[in-house]
Length: 525
Image (tube, rainbow, N blue to C red):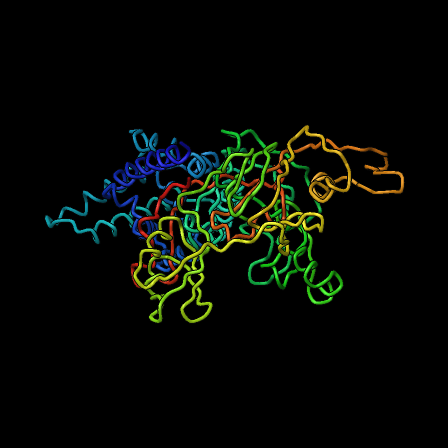
């Protein structure tokens, strides 16, 4: 539904820009073709050609785009601040209105006058000649109705406006993300570029409002923190369109990302401490803490809701004692034995299948159920078995990382996901499961003394949660760092709902096959 609304509003805005281009004496379609539209605008406005080339440079392209776009809007007399804001924030409203308003004229009619003068030689008007007349008319317009700003001031205004507009859009409406890892294969692929909606679940008010624009937690080029903790606001979420639903694909801040080893951020800090020891980690790495909204972004499927009973038995997820949802494109890894000829690894790669040679004639391959059936049918495959951990055998870095729970990624639980208002007893069995949520996520001082447990200085034998929590897992069950490592995801870590892929780039492809054309504007389910 959200994707449909987004596409509809985009089409309405494009229709409005089509009408404005027609008012400017151009073909309407020219206004909605990426890059070509900006090239025409640059020619009209007398901007150098390298402006258009900058549209491929990340971050810089935002400022260039808005500079061209707003200057073009100014050609219709729309110079007021609120008109500029409306053109950026609600183009699907104002562009069609301006396009259909007979009183809104391009360059106040100067173009029409000069166009007629350009035809007096009796020759057919070429596109190049037309662009020249447009440009000359723009210069005459600037002379007749001069801006009271220097070029530096114009650019400064455009940069400030673009920064504020883009920050508001990214913070409260939509944000683009890229899939860097294979934890959601094959549902989402490495190189998929997504749009994530902040509106569905309600946008969060930033915890750290003082931050460098367009950077998340680290300054580009120079390194170091891209945010200031001088002002820290409490968690607050604005109203959204919907509640989180079981099996939604969600972007969220890493729960274990409150502390990071800067030189080795691929492995959670707490995993490093368990592997190397705290002293060794602090001696070898630079340790940095981050507020909630500046922790690393992750994308997983929400398989468990607040209050759900979760367990996993021999690789099968159970939710409230019923088999959980399995995405059709979810993967597991298999040990595949072949004859001496082996498997054509390039063939697998072309099919988007990950494979690793364990020893001659033995491969570890990540497959969806349909892919597993296909590979099993190949004549040179002799044996094939899903690679599962045995029950009761503890696996390193498996939640809750406590000796009394001999759990692994394929066998764990059961336990109940905390929900707001749920009360749990405080004892040796519950603390490994819920202790981090009580102390870190809900900011309580929990102490064990000789006569019992103390919460913020008061003796108690139970705790009632103040937030809802969720259980997030990757569809690629054996190649995903997820809740099985770091546990519950608090509601204040939720960023937004993944809507659709707007671009997909295959780094292993060749030529035009580098773009996965079948994934462009593909919805995420």
